[in-house]
Image 1 (cartoon, helix red, strand yellow):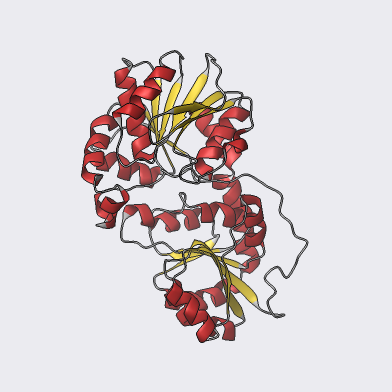
Image 2: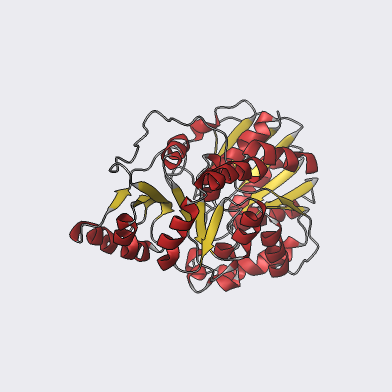
Length: 382
């Protein structure tokens, strides 16, 4: 599983509690992931394992009270990788072994077996519900070995002590998929820190006076053409569509240029702090995930978009499903649509009570998406 802010934030949160963390990275430099210098923290040790199973220790010291966090992105779970890990961890008494996503969890569980159950608790940190309902593309994501990985996941799921997952709905799914209905789950929504927001530029997107903005950020391969179809209608109603992120198709970019569509496209990647500033200047935020499988459907508490939108008080528009209805019924911070063609009408309706939606969005952040507050609950349960 790729190194993301969810992993780095978790390490930082444990370190803030003065808990020592050993983070094992698989081929991080070869895959151009995050630089290890972000872990310039006395409580965090980064240990890299390469594709050739050689071990590079950036810094290593032995402590009694530790959490070991492992994640991998190899084609298969190599015995050599587990053996390399066993050489290191057998000399250290860890309190927890956290496996991030399927392969990280399997490595944790297999390693624990190899060492005779040396760890007091194994935690499966689930970020994606990649299961059989995901479709044919899932096999390619696992290098043609999805069935083998799933069989191992089901086998070892019974042996993990705790599942760290975003909310109750996703917990029910992962327990059902792994045939273990009563596995203990601790809820930890995808959340974000309260970084400072730069409000110096009131017209951040440089739109004409009187024009408001509707933002979609992140991966731009989903529903982009459908949004372009209504961009002119939105602009006629004084709304500009803003697309910020990566993965937009060449076809969509050609449409924007050739049809001279009223759309702002930004493909410049920015830091997390800069992203929060960017999002804070939008009037509405889109969270558009398909309803065709549980992983995409149940995203109200598992999407970085929601964390950032609510952090800066941006009202949200999503597709209609049980996940977003659960959030919006508690905090009326957004509305659901069934089709993108409904977007112009729903925005016009929300505009009538915009201040209320904005205030509720900020309240939802305090309730669910403040990462330090959420982590305190997780830490106390552990």
